[in-house]
Length: 73
Image (cartoon, rainbow, N blue to C red; front, top):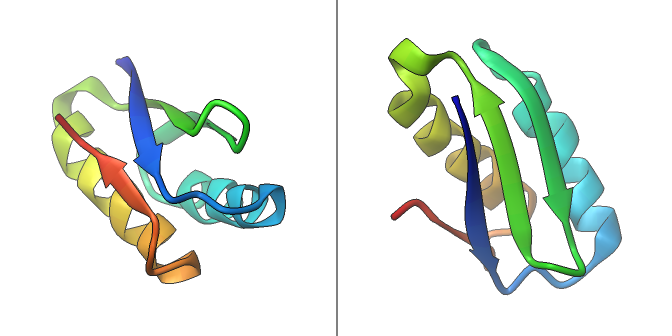
């Protein structure tokens, strides 16, 4: 499954790259792209666990920058 999530308060391209690396390491993630310019994360992951993986991805982004919010709705 592939979904695009809005990101709030993503301040720099370097942070986006660090978040991408952190999310990519999660089990079940097929691909991830985080765009600083569009403030969006495109996540591709295992269909059966997609919601769980999306939550883990949001937590991984928070660890890089605790002000960033991934809108999971």
